[in-house]
Image (tube, rainbow, N blue to C red; front, side):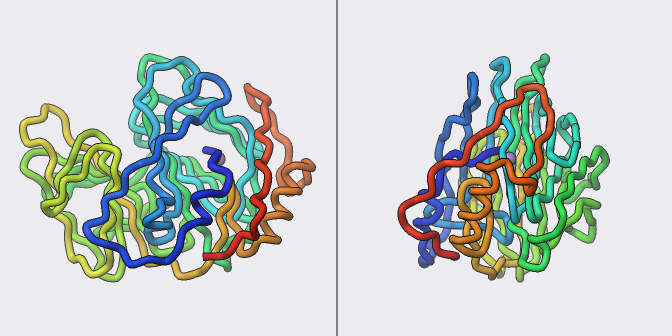
Length: 316
Ligand code: MN
């Protein structure tokens, strides 16, 4: 995924007191080089920059458009991209030479570290395209590491109070994903059936619940489809209820983690710690520097970086 919002409103975020319950409404963005799928972005949000180390959340689809996603080569630094599909397939290529097709129930985890470039193209078929992409900010000790790409077909899958949980990142309820993480966190798909399920939480973590398939009731708060409920620290459990008469389960995604205290700058597809670092990364992408090696894919495009804003970016 490539961030086409070119700076604002991410850099306009100020520390503010959060009114609860906080239910984040997505912004709709067109992600396009060809037909273009509509993105519903809930993080970062003007009211909330991140949840634990999760700093970006795009949901897309379902769409049956041919060639719905055609995201040409673009760079990343200082973050991990986490791709999780509900339907359809996406082909990933990157500057490490990785080539991978992901389908529902599998995880693509790309650790940008000091720098990587990748492209993402949906593969047309019978199933519509629907999925999410999240970014995890890397802590200072890990952000300069070498880039890495991991694809997982097998992930921990288990039941909890009638819910079916697939853990793609981190840990929950004593289960651990094999995906490499650098901060204490969780990312899980939860399918709710029947009258609802109680999900135990860690009191020292904050969480978010994304309503994927339908409206859901989380502890009495109605979270409309495509919205993200913020759950602050101090909660022991969540009671998540779907539509009791539905023939299919209600799907939500749970993200969370230890609050991430390091200040950082997120601009376009880069995360750094200062304005000058971001300028350097941008120049290196624009000049085809070896920090972001060339690679081959089926579309052979290259997304240029937007212009830098006229003000200096401030770490927040
Ligand atoms: Mn990307």
